[in-house]
Length: 529
Image (cartoon, rainbow, N blue to C red; front, side):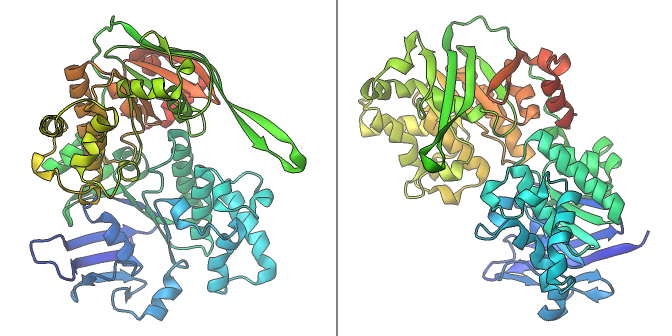
């Protein structure tokens, strides 16, 4: 089969770094016409840098070595002048970036952003543009496209934003589409829809796709050939079935095994009930023109309980109300109904009473980088709770406790004076967990704590949480849209849809014998092994 693009002997270094520092070395990748090629590996493996280099979007600090070649249409893209490369970008080769909300211009409408590529490359006149934009929006299955032409990115859902990105990329009928982690932050059902959309567009347009991802579930179901990257090198390559059934390199085996999160062996939990909510409801009052107001029900009479030392999983799509439940429990947003913790109704406590109880009820947020202060060392971040809760300890005792919790979460005590930006995503999440666990809470709310992590790091964090739970007998409310993660860590699962809990049971029953159609849809879309 004819190759559409060939990466040959690709080497990249960075200014000011030595030979021992990170570089991309001797990468060889072939992309045939009409096929999907996946590059997989952990964060920092070099997969995105390699893909960006195809379009000359690599960082200014990088240096592509002279013997490197990226051959497309008989031209070496590493050697042609920028004006020639601009004629290829967004025209013959397009790219869908990882985070659509960051990649789309917040000041421009959907219509303007989709039409931009056609105008730049002068492939359509202004009178034809609107019809072509609507046609593209229909092609990527955006419902009622005419009503969304004048909308801005923040007025669309996550799935719609990603579809707009795909429409932009397809506007000039490219031969190659580079998709860089296009489904990482999406719910399982939307993820499945986007992947099926790409597959159907590929068949219709004979499109070649270069898929950059750390999610091997996507690779297994939607790719033809796989390149595995580690530390800037391709360590293994082959057809999908061979890579999954018979991986040769230990790193590939590690990636494949980390993906296979199996059902956790449960201990039947008969511990004391420490927490319950009764008829928990949340309403959002929206002001309308002419002084009118509209009340939207976000949560509707939610009821559930959690036992000491138990993990309860809360699953559902974005907008279903998962995070709202967590914030309501902590009384970070207004709600109605009973929130009973350790026999006390939290909904009746005043601010001073509530603050004194917060040490027993902690939260770990989805984005550790955003939730950790960039101006504080990790030592200061971890001991902050002890100080704010006025737990009377000497500074030396606080330091001892900080050292202990750092060891518990697998971090070196030598890192105590470093700042959050000096750590990887997985390490930052460990810091966030340490900050919460040092207070020895009875209940820890975990809001999507592994959603942005690679499979291997994800597995490390999940095992860390299990070990900490066994050590401190902490109960977890684990909020996630990743059903693989929930299947691995949860004792019981509650499924939420449109503000209602529609099904609840032990984890094994939910995954093996789901009763509700929505639950069945979630599980079938989750690409479980």
